[in-house]
Length: 536
Image (cartoon, rainbow, N blue to C red):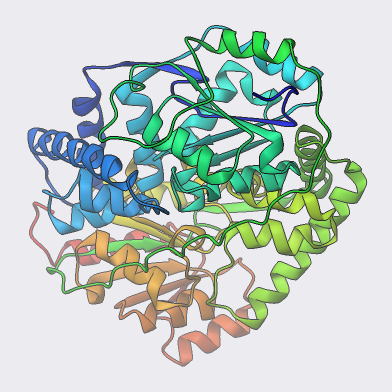
């Protein structure tokens, strides 16, 4: 038995930090959201059919998770796989495709709908004690929505003590893969033998801790502890009824010295987006976000705001980082990002690469793994900090016109955070009117690449020739939409492209219309609607 306290304490989420109480109404609640998504894509869907598919999909997911924990190095399902191939597998392809593009938000809603979360006894005191002793803290958890777990920890105030949070949906592997624990330890700068891992299951947590070489593997009992899906040839070092026992264990032990950190295992790549297929005849609308729906005034304090967040993250991970140094790294990394975009316009840069390599290049090496783990959170922060955003004049009128006339409407946008864009649209009060939204950081392809257009078109379920695309850039929106087979391309003045570039796009047939305002598209859409049955 170890005679010293750990240098790092890694904790599972459910069963350790929080307990859950199942909610009986989760399926009808989530079914209503699926019906809304179907409606924005122009599809009518019986809520009972959606609910039945959700229940069947959740049961199948449970079986898959049990089977996956038998594997030596299991991968996590991509969010779109979970939505399209499990939860909504019984529904029409266009509904599955549209919901798949909104998979992260749908899975967040599912996680929060299926159960209420309650902080387990002794957890706040445990985290406060560990932090006061300089014991690094991390969360390592299988999750289909790390976003929801982060939200729960934020709401309870527990996140203020935690250095890194490693969720399977964000890193692409799942426990008992030891790589999840190794990633957390690398970010915290602690060797496996100097860490404790605390979970509530034998087949996932104890096996993961053993494979990762954790100095001690501990169980805090919960409802799943005694319900293993198969025999497990691994045992914990200590079994406790609640985290209160873990606090008592730490208090009786002296500190131990720091050792070297491990190397991280590679993250498996995401599956490619599905290809588009033939669609029935009816009009639909695809909009760019920046420059079309939203205009932005740059915020000169962007780098300082994000730099302060990096310094705070570094402090929670046990690394020293001056806020001014961090702000300079953000500015330099942003410059590198822009250069990469110019060199390869269609190649999207993964959030982990943006923060770990481009922004993190000049920062202390031990901090960079933490930046990779927190990349999606940081990208959302950076998007919000870039500037003051407001709706472009005429944009909301166009969107509401399309919704009132049941015209399916989607978004195709190059962005560093689709999640933050969705929050912006919700803030305008139009988030519920938007159908399939393809954001480059989620799809993995940037405009003018065909793949990002194909992803949105798959959810619209229309012939691309009947789609009106509205953008503000001749290359990304004009040439990109044409290459995807979109029938009508509208470019708006007032964006980054000057008038001569827009005029050339019109002359070359890359654009069909150059307009002053999104409101000018309403007339074009009204003309299209006169050519189809009034029921549309």
